[in-house]
Image (cartoon, rainbow, N blue to C red; front, side):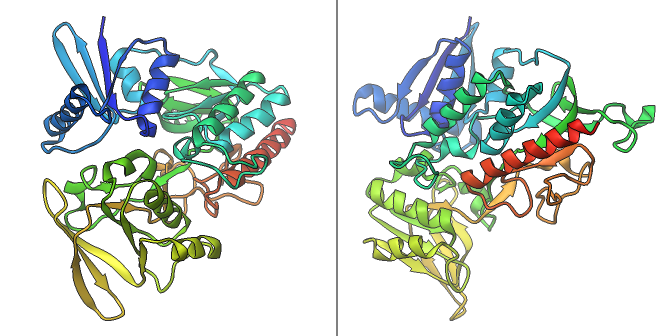
Length: 415
């Protein structure tokens, strides 16, 4: 039997995801909170630093750290996905059937809404998810602009509500399940192609296959990384992409936020209100692209400064951030700044790597569709943040999921 210990903090969404997944699998674990002001808390915090140093070669602060003891052998997993946990612990992930009317890849608002609509119409629906039920919504601190919740709702509760609603209509959810390829039901060596095969197949990383009539790609997107000299060594040390995940490391500190859109401004307000002493926002363009309402909130907030036409060109430091070089394009001058940490919100990149050379993607990797949300391959649809032209809003993703479901229903009726 394995002995499992999770080291993390209650504000960490990845920690909550990990605990939730192990709990759903009825796997016992011990929890060590690095935030507790006690010898046990300090011991847990020191263990996190030591574990990161053992894995990465430097004392990063990535959490959760999962320690697995089995037969006097220790395994350390840092920020593991649910797929990695399942593989390490030998948890079987298997669909109940070999064939479905519809397979939805992605369990965010788009995918779950589509599944809900299709299941209510009595189609056999399977939802596949590699990481977290709820997608980006799960790690969002709070949704204040989703209709129907006048007081707002936490991202975690919103995701749980979605899960309960699709469960009510019998939607099967398979997770964690890592899709590496989709294709026609017969391999090209057997004469198969999307043009010849009416049915599709999904292939997992372990080689298992699931067949279906239609596929909805709703894999969402993730934050685009800051890539400049010095950034690779400092990611996870002082460079972060999730304010709710890592903000508490910077109580009373000075932060640099990179980006000029809604995410950058929303997260700056969150970081300033909850943790940081001061925040400087570096905007690459002539002016921010955030909505006027958000821009006004940031401008009225104490302790937040905006620098436009300013871009990070280099980071200094190996084991910790020592300096940030920012080029101010108005003057052409490059200045050195010394924040305690950097949070990056410079746009999204789609989770579509497994689709390359299989269906049509735009130059940024987003799935292209027609007005009916169908891709260039008959019977394969796309919705939500992975789709070219998406707005990266939960309400829009849900709407696209509903529209995709109606289009899929019409497609299946004509078969």
